[in-house]
Image (cartoon, rainbow, N blue to C red; front, side):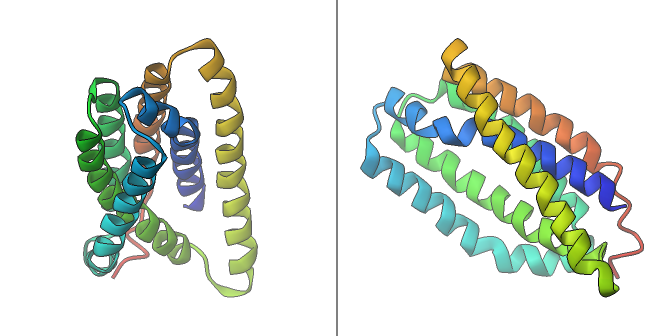
Length: 181
């Protein structure tokens, strides 16, 4: 049912939305500058691009749910490592891993939403889906802004990790058996 996808992906975007806007602060704490932020983000994007085709083909065969779950719980674990990172080289390694996991999420999310929508109401359902996940993402940035004033960047990563882990539990409720051949 689309409901579980909306809930899980809204939580996922809330968890990542807490962290991402303050990522540059984290990089400056490990000695990074704007150039290194650009390199890190580029590494994330390129590593993601390199696995999108593979994820798409595999998700057609084994289903989308498993890739969503690997992304969510894998990212939750990686978020726990950020507070112990001490060098920009470690950040680059983490960015490769997050890029691969991000490709799993982006490709599988779009495919599973398409699987659960059809007919004349497809646009309406997809619009509703994006409304909810975007709303949660926007609120995450606002909440993160307040939290960063009260707490540390490390705590924001821990909160994000917990939220991602909970998101994974909601993914378990998705029944895609009718959708994947």
